Length: 331
Image 1 (spheres, one colour):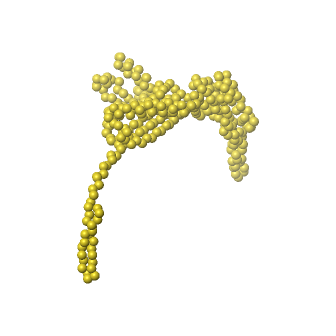
Image 2: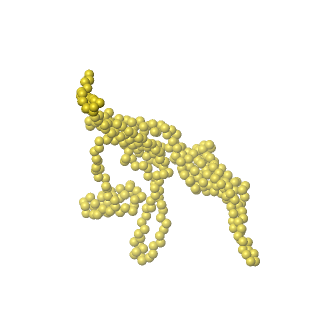
Image 3: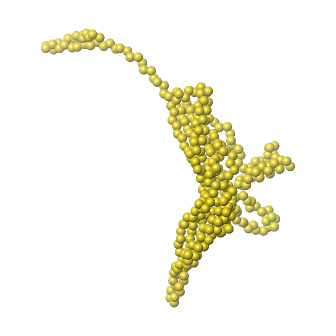
């Protein structure tokens, strides 16, 4: 009973996004049951020695946004341009009043006009020998985007409630902003430089003098926002044993798709600042890579040796006789 209760609690804590994985509920620890689903493949990694020394360090900073901007789309149709504009203004004014009462400043609400176009319908005109279809204007359509800036995530619920009360349901996106991104990069840079120093000391203790190596380096920095890290899944079970017993057909229902925030995993990072996160954050990363290659050894040139040469010259007489004489030099 304790074992079953433990497995049940673990499953609930794990979540539903991988519910399609089936795990035997029998006593797996004793080896009496077969295990289904992906197994752990985290074995010891093989490393290959090399004459080069590589220092590759990564750092990640989970930065909470300083402010947010939510964008809602509103669409309104009306019989005339004046009536359409009036209806839109009434809805937006109501939203603005509720948000100001909730603590959001008037300057943090902006309106962006997207389109204002006439709407046409098809009018059928029948004659004795023909039928014509004519497009005639029937009204106007006005589309606008409402930009709302807020600084606390708790305010977003009030923003949603105010928009829904005025029939504004189309949430386009939520942007995240950091006031001083340079300060974040500075913290990452300081942490990585300190780690590089530790790595150099480590190799020095192993007996490697890095002054005997040529070095090349590369660095990189990046920034990711939450909107790119939402994944989806469907948690359901379509098997119906009751339908099998009653021998009746099964009517399939539309399965709901759930979404969840899946940030960058920290398993491949050497330094993680603000590792524990409660809400979606802006993830700022930096990498420094140093490659040390042994300096080529200087080849010693052999000593120079003096080579003594004997100089000779040839004397040719008018009658054709050749006489060889040695040339004496001061050397």
